[in-house]
Image (cartoon, rainbow, N blue to C red; front, top):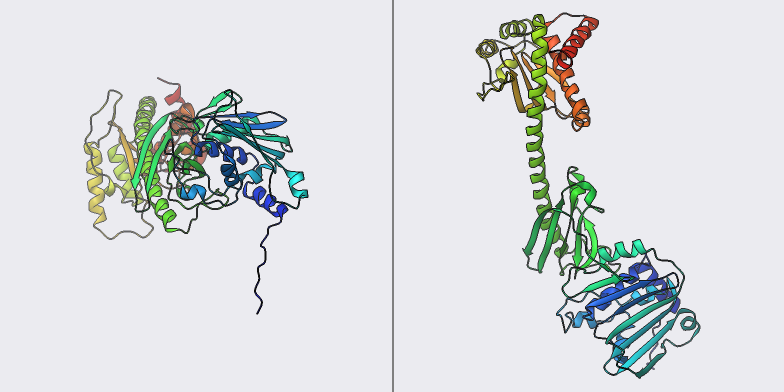
Length: 494
């Protein structure tokens, strides 16, 4: 048996294509080069973008001939083995070393100049020349440094085949490089790029797991317009991988557009494209559960706060509306319901709704609107409760909405309650002397933030039920006329 060896090679064109595919947006190569500077302990990085070239220059540790060879090695283990930078103790970001090949998707020429010690090293990577050559080696030159040269590296992309928008580059740098790191500043065409600050509530995240730490903060912006791209930025080694709501967008709508912030978890495994995590890994599954729980708690707190504000506002709105209704009923005493009249109506229509009404004593206000039941209402409720003990008549039971607020028109035998009846439920209905307004109804939701229209909406619903409550047998035209009279007096009359 004769044994030998064969050489495993990769076509150069395939290597370039691989770089292009891994970095779908050419702008990502700028991120890669800035993060290389971060890994090299640079404190300042200058990015200069012109129609002819892109230059990234830093004051990092620089590279000698061996360092440059490592720089151009695809899939090098260097940053895995030495995962912490020697000077500032930074967790290094770079991983695959494919970025310089991706750079050639946007430029024909890639030049690296680096000062290390007393020498300046230069490597020229010309796409056309390299592809035509049978050799894989790149030309490198070395010359003595002068006092004018500072330690660091300068990368130049020349003969651009794609143009870069300044606004896109700035946006991407804010998203994809560790701008909040200590002793690290990035400048774009002379202007320092800083991380966005979003005013709002900040929830610190500091969770220790068996795999490592999850650190950062979730931000609930003051208002939606302050968040350009909602979602929590999930980072590894301070580099953005993706934004995520952890599937809460499937069950929540309110508040999602106000959520921002970032968390860093260096233990998370990342796909080769660096645009997502290895989602079936145990590390990510734990991260997902913990972050979802954090975000879900925030959304629940936000919902409670929103409901509290809604309750405060609707209480004032209802008091104002009922004060107007009271004035209108004083001008139309024949339309004023009473406890006895309502009790009689209950008997006639055979409803048992009054049994669900219980008295809640609360302070009265000067407008004549109170949040309690009169003696007549209590008596009517008692009569219906006694009636309930008898065999019930056929027919479906009335709905029993969860009441979130209830206000009574003092001495007029009418109460108004707010309840959630569902989007498909009626916008209003009455049971005895109690008027239910459906807070889930699309009209309620649409008009809630339009103060004048919302007040008119409440007046329309309440007067509609009062007319039907008092006048049991009216033709549609008569009912509309009575309601129009009440509405006119409530809005215009005093």
